[in-house]
Length: 60
Image 1 (cartoon, rainbow, N blue to C red):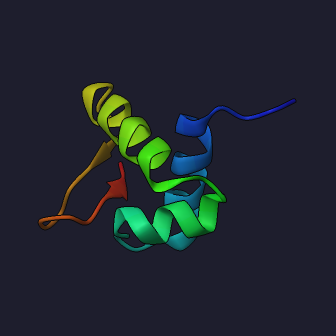
Image 2: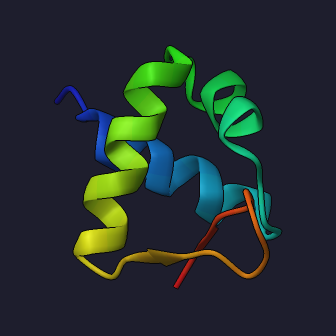
Image 3: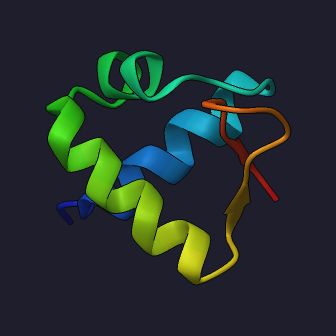
């Protein structure tokens, strides 16, 4: 089963266990940064991730 971008971003955040910047998420998830930015927007709307400090994201 192929994971969508949101699932890949969420997995990268869960596995890291610490807040990550979008560029780091892109690297870990193997995605383009623009794709990560879109996924972050969606995940924030769904309240699955939050930003503990500016430009860093963490899974809830």
